Length: 553
Image 1 (tube, rainbow, N blue to C red):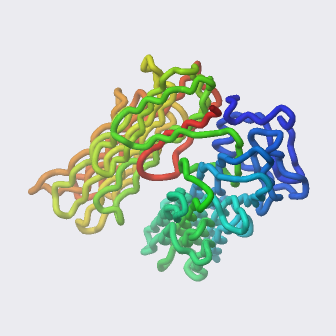
Image 2: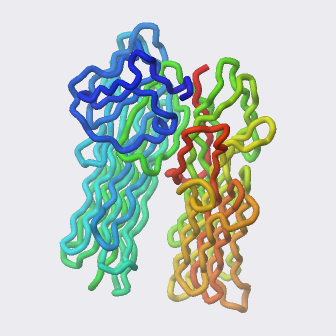
Image 3: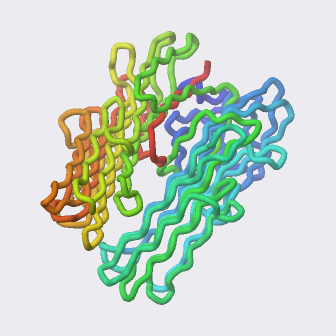
């Protein structure tokens, strides 16, 4: 366990069960990727920051007040909202709940100041702002509730809020063709004293072969009073219920809508993610999404600090401080690129999110490379993503480029942690009938080649998606271009994501006028000799990657 996240021995391994609070010598991966918890009563005193350097708070709803002890003027906070709920027990199951927002910020505090903590849950009644309830359906599956936001409040004013993920939409008819939409992830924190970015929009539900469309996905913005709104279920025609929006501040996510149609109806759309926020008295250090954290949590530390790196199309060197021997790292690969028609084309895949503790000798150098997304073509990174497939006909649209891999290497050039990039979305085509491009594959479902998912096929005949970690080199493959006139061309394929050893395969273009396939994701890695507690999962925030180094100077 690194000193950055160690709890003082006097409170180590003590479970304050009655307060729903835990202080322990958990690994960095546990603190940075909170796992689902069992809610408990809230009657005991909270963790004492006067005797502990770090306290982790779980539970649900409003927790007891934390009083700042003498001698403490600054806290580092890791605030994680709740993941949105996922409907279960139906064939097919509903869409996955959207990941939570996670905000890392520094708080300027003073002795005697009281902080009120709120912990979000996948429950329409829990959190600083609640997630909206999922809509019901008469003959299909209901949507799930959005996740509640987690927050730190002082004098009735929010200092930091991490938005909840949107709830997954309910499954539609009893055919595997009809899939529901996934919830959007919680929004990122904004600049100090300003609103954060809105939560991510969610994904529409699947379609049925019987003139029935899937429900629209909710957007990540402007639900009234910061609460997610529930969709109206289709009680007559049996579409899947829409997912509830995630709680956020100042805006929650809007709800997804139910599928509709004439006979066998589509899956409901997922709810949008709630907005995250950083206000006066707090300074944003970093944001990253967490795809599968379950309920929310808050970590407060009196000594923890952070170094944060963003996409700069180049490498940066960081000198390990003289008093530091290990660093807790969050490494996030870049997402794939958005095709030139984002409304109909396939969505890009997420980059991997790898959390690990790195053994780093004092005064040594670490080299950090942050992957860039594939929105403008091949994403820059430790390994570049593949270029976008070009549509050479006026009815088709270009695919998205692959996302670049993010990495940390030592002075000898040895890669310690690599987070693969996501595959680019496949381009759509408006040649009759309209054909949607395939989704890019996401990285981080585990280490190595098996953890890199392939892209999905576009609507049509030959627009196959690229395989995950298919290439023999770390660079992602370029998406396939469409045929040139006078031949009938389709949408361009998505580029593959960059990886550690194997980049993602290319999405193919459909020469018969269909949508292009999504690119595959790149693989991810953590050096078992130099890291411990490594965890892998897909990121939950599109766009560029990020690298966060947490340590105690």
